[in-house]
Amino acid sequence: MVLTRGDDYPIHQTPEPVAYAGTDRNFYDRFFFNGYAPDVGDDGFLAVALGVYPHINVIDASFCWLMNGRQVNLHASRGLGMERMDTQVGPIRIEVIEPLQSLRITIDAPDEGIRADITFTGRAFPLEEPRFTRRNGPRVLMDVTRMTQNGSYAGWVEVDGTRTDVTGWHGTRDRSWGIRPIGAPDAQPPSPPIAPQFFWLWSPCAMEDGDLYAHTNDDAHGRFWNRRAAFRPLGGGIDDEQHYDHADYRIGWKPGSRHAQSAELTLRNETGDTRVTFEVGQTFMMLGLGYGHPKWGHGRSHGEALTVEREDFTPAELDPMQPHHLHIQASVGVTMTGPDGSVRRGKGVLEQLVMGPHAPSGFTGVLDPA
View 1 (cartoon, rainbow, N blue to C red):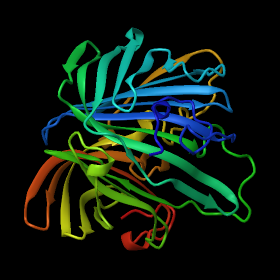
View 2: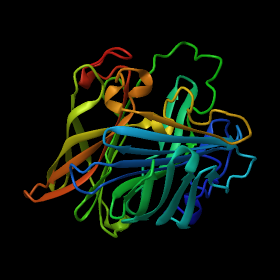
View 3: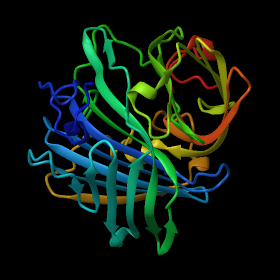
């Protein structure tokens, strides 16, 4: 085992677990959470993120609430002051209650009309994903370790005076750390120039009796450079994990976009093929958490003093082919049919970020739509 209690805190120095140390300008250390009502078709989605960027001395965080088709985002940023253990950015605070098991999130932004007090509790021990290492020519684009954990929530969220009880909601959190682009972009472009290409699907799902985790990073030809699929029973650990040797997504793309309107996943191991079908639901814009945000991108400096801002939009009204609108999480109802015909049902998300060519999808340019 590589994960230790310290891996739930933003104190890492390299893409390795906290047992090892090092340094890089683009090093980051990040919390992420999402949550949703457990029944398929129920409205409501929440998301939280907090990032620490030690070498540019910035800490930022966001909280998002999606209800009735409207997404409300709370952004906050301040100088880090070289203190990595202070996981509060103005109104947004994350507290580790029990490492690798339970965390509390509090939001207190009365001027922006947003308050929350929620606790995440893991359903099983976190899953350590394969290390993500990717270069653009001689440059390191990503060198990241990430752990993922499905869980349940207890508590409430209040937006504009309307309080919603989220006790019993399910969701996923991850902790990632390592090297990836952060802060202001590099002023000197790569040589020779490299067209952007990134294909990412991630589908953590809370099933009736356990958790399904699957993801893929593909190159332009559809060859994966990072992929994993596993099922872990409720309360299970590493020894209880069922791995799949083969995981193949099939996406039906929504015309005029690079977002899925249907999706299937075929899993294979020694017992045979398992088929997973996704019923694609509401769209959450990862923009709300700073991903690709032109102003609130991860690690962007807003000065040493605390800066807080609320942002509202309706995802259905946004142009899906704007680069900063490509990255989404769609809530999905999930049906998992095993080789023996047994059926598991659940709910989860299908995260999507597709930029550049991807031959199996028919994409040939940087931003050509389906």
